[in-house]
Image 1 (spheres, rainbow, N blue to C red):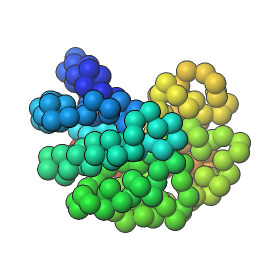
Image 2 (cartoon, helix red, strand yellow):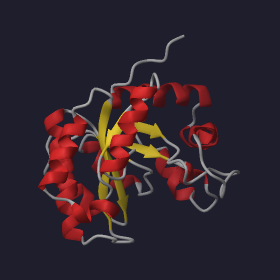
Image 3 (spheres, rainbow, N blue to C red):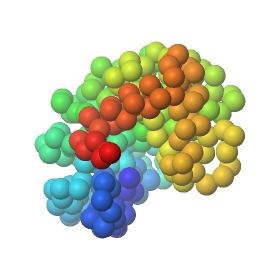
Image 4 (cartoon, rainbow, N blue to C red):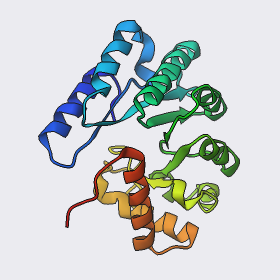
Length: 222
């Protein structure tokens, strides 16, 4: 996922270089202070690339608030409008801002996408699935103190459940504190599979199918 225009351009370069790689483009709420018409125009141009399959990372952050809330809300709303216009999913960052995120999404009928590294409760998750979003769980769900998050995972409709790394951050137990990478995802999958009462292979098959549906990714070749 991209954080700003330079990383969006870099994501496309990498996706062009490697078979099977896809890109997202967007401006993270931490980086949206310079959001203006020129930025919006360039983002639209980047989003038209055939390797781009999502808009984001975008959203709201009321925890660190590196940018004023009104600035974040404007940039997020414009990301969502672009995603709907181009029929692309949006990848949403939310920290201590779930209610505010939901209000912006309600103003973008037809929105699809992912609540990235979700750590809210089941009631909030239902709001987002009702709005058309998927719920993506990261290594946070494996942390010892996150029993409530594991219980919440069991209430997410399976057709709306995704798994992710958020690499290089949020390595799952027992690798917490190390640099995260895709190879660590099975640890997260094992914890979520136990929470939802499925085998790891069955969960992996389901969440992989969900991810392909969201991002339009082709099935892996044999």
